[in-house]
Amino acid sequence: MKKMRIPYHKSESRSFSPCQNIFTEGDTGDTMYVVLEGSVDLLVHDRVVEKLGPGGVLGEMALLEPAPRSATAIARTECKVVPVNQQRFHLLVQHTPDFALQIMRVMADRLRTMDARL
Image 1: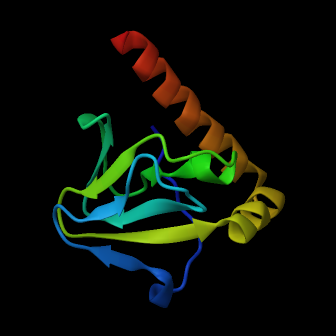
Image 2: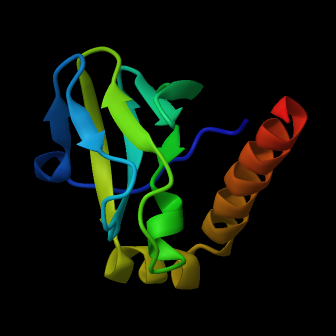
C-alpha cells in the first residue's frame, strides 16, 4: 500500500508511548491520523486486524461519517502521528485530488482484507 504523505508543521505531531490508546472503538471521532514514526495496531473487538507503520492512515472513517469509531488504535511502539481534522481533510481533498484517491484506496484495501477474513 502506498504511504500517505501530508504537509505538516513539526509542532502539530503528537507522540504516543507503547500500549497507549490513540482512540478507542465506540468513541466519537473527529480526527484521522497519519503515522510519522513507529507503529500502531488497529484492533476490532480486541483483535489486531492491521499493523501500521510510517505513512499509515488511521481513523479516516471519522471524517466521512458521524458514527462511533469502528476500531481501537494502540501505539505498538513509541510513535508520532499527525492529526488531520475535518477542516484540514477538506483542504487536502480540494487542493490535492490524489489525497482523496489515497484515502479511498486505504478504505478499499481494508474492506477487501476484512472480506477475506470472513
